[in-house]
Amino acid sequence: LLSGDSYGNQYGGDLESAYEKITGDRFTELTPDEVQYYYDAAATADEDLDYDVDDAVADAVVTFFRDHSLDSAAAVSVYIDDPANDVLPDIPDGFLQDVFVDFDPIEVEDQLP
Image: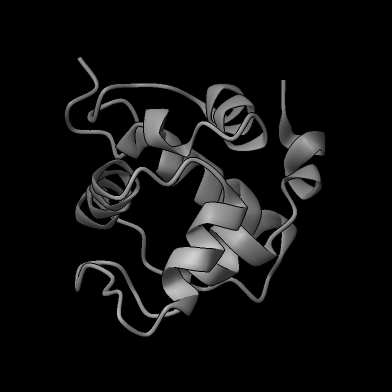
């Protein structure tokens, strides 16, 4: 039903479910739709965030978290800080650091239902 919409076409979820997974250190459980919801809320809260997060980027983020068993901001930070590690080319430079490490999820609480 929502396959033409940027939300709801990749395994579902919403901002609330994304927030619960991010604050609960369950990044590997995120769906691409939740990545998009969370990014959009983060970009609303922080005007300095300026990335194009389409379905391919959201899917790459989910794949990255799962492939490397990265469940938390701390784990993502350790991984991306190691120069021996690579990030998927579909993920924009700085995106993981800006959105999943540096951005404080509390900043989206006022957007939750």
